[in-house]
Amino acid sequence: MNFNKDSIQRRDFLRMGTASLLGLSGATSILGRINPAHAAELETDPVLDPNAALRRLLDGNQRFMQHHPQYPDQSQARVQAVAQAQHPFATVLSCADSRVPAELIFDQGIGNIFDVRIAGNIATPEALGSIEYAVVLLGTPLLMVLGHERCGAVTAAVQNEALPGEIGSFVKAILPAVERVKGKSGDMVENAVVANVHYQIDQLKRSPLLMERVKSGKLKIVGGRYDLDSGRVTTVI
Image 1 (cartoon, one colour):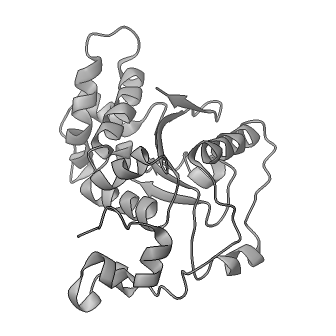
Image 2: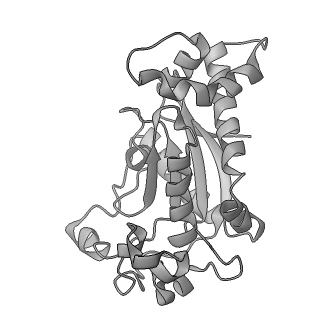
């Protein structure tokens, strides 16, 4: 992919068309099949700066945790409004765990969050590509890497034992985070959960596309930890 660093703006992208921006001959990729006419403008959502996007996400988690959800943007009208285009205000890289559905724990609706879910919330090339798509082409101002309490993937990396099939394929990507917390006091798995969030953020920051947006102030990258017992999401630094 050949992105011009001075011209990666969502509206410019939509005007030029996906295939021309990416330089893909024949427009054979999935991105090349997007119809820019349908993605031109959708004014159903306000354009948020990164800090406002983070507040919106955490405010939604407060509602969820306190059992006062609003269930926003889940009507049939919303379904129709975003049918031809999406402008999510946040991208969340989270664990593929049935107890951590982003729209529910952040009390959001259809088209609000661009979900990337994979065991251990690891930044694989495929996950990174999905995130770059959301940040650069859809313009999400916030990227959160969300780990969670008692994560099975992190536990498997801590134990580092053989697993059947491809179940353990994510362990290698988490092991560097485990190394960071060896010898530290406290619960090894819980320490590794937070360390893994930091480590995966470090991997994402190797992306020139993401870092360009960070440096320009158009993107904020944060870490989060979800507490399975309380439902609370806390930012991790």
